[in-house]
Image 1 (cartoon, rainbow, N blue to C red):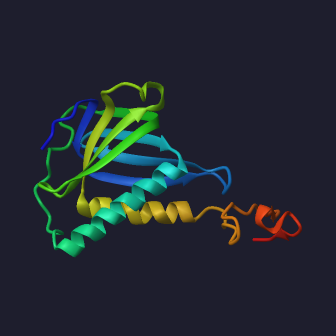
Image 2 (image 1 turned 180 degrees about the vertical axis):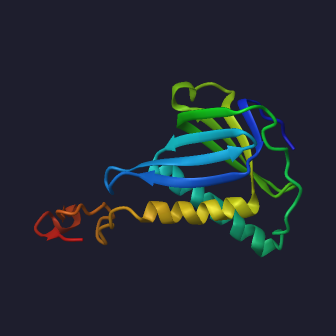
Length: 173
């Protein structure tokens, strides 16, 4: 298993949950993490959350086709340090699956320091926890505005002037 470095290494986290705040069209998204006595709030874009969920789903499906779903020992223990409250906006998020531990490794870069080679935050998520995260993230992202069936753009409560209909007819949600 390759070794990675980060400013904060949370080890294997004990909980993760996606969340959206605000009204559809003006929502902000975040991941809330717990590892030992550390709490983390990662603010991210909706697209980042969606892609994270899709990647986890694809890996989970590939593993089930290969019959590699059995749980393994966690790759690292949870955060052994004292209480920490970490919060930042995600600039870059790298995600990978380690087959030897059947866990996902997250490397997170703050938007302010996303050009640095060293990640700001690193943590592991078990396969079962990652699958639950993926399912919840898809539900959180889907709870927003409905999408136009013609152009795929969000439909606001007051309607939508669809470019695919040449703007001739406003579409209602």
